[in-house]
Amino acid sequence: MLIEGRSEDRGALAAMLAEIMIATNLRFLDHARRPSREQAIAAAHSPEVRAEMVAARVRLKETLHAHDDAWIIARAGSAETMLRRLLDATTAFFLPTVAGPVRARVRYRVTAPDRAEPIELDLVIEDGKCGLQDGSKDGVPTLVLAMSFRTALETITRARHFDHAFRCGDLRIPEGDLNAALSFLDWFDYYE
Image (cartoon, rainbow, N blue to C red):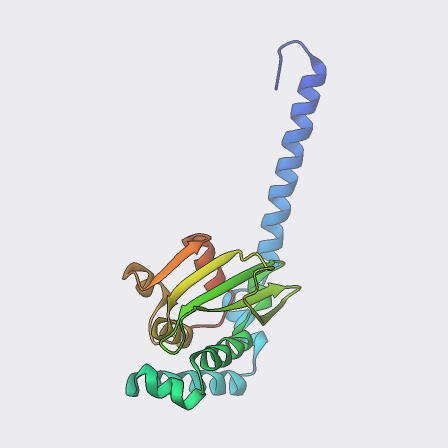
């Protein structure tokens, strides 16, 4: 860009570098002003509510360990119903101050024993909120997580860690990348 001897090139380069530095500093300041993860968790839920949420997750883990998929599906009515309930409950664990001003659509593509086609449900994050939507063909996902019904139950309830399922090949990321998936996990209070 810089051609020696042309003062307008130097000015253009200086202006471009100034814009880059300002944008970088603004991103840093925005990140620095956000509360820590612990502060975000404390602000999101009272200790009593968080304890109830964690207790519900522990009960789900115990159910997973005690029963097979067929029993869980029979109790819920269908694999999709159970998955929908779990993902809907997951939205309560969303930490908007940690996520920041992000827009994302994370699609869960889950193969289940009670149906031929995979279940597709999206967690949609925008305007500081997280909601559950059907995985429509209209919404373009930022990230797609493909897995079996059992792996979905285990990772959503944290009976199994996401990265372990990924390393074992039980969870695939056909769209998006592992860094996006790890960022997505940080937006939720998944840790006891």
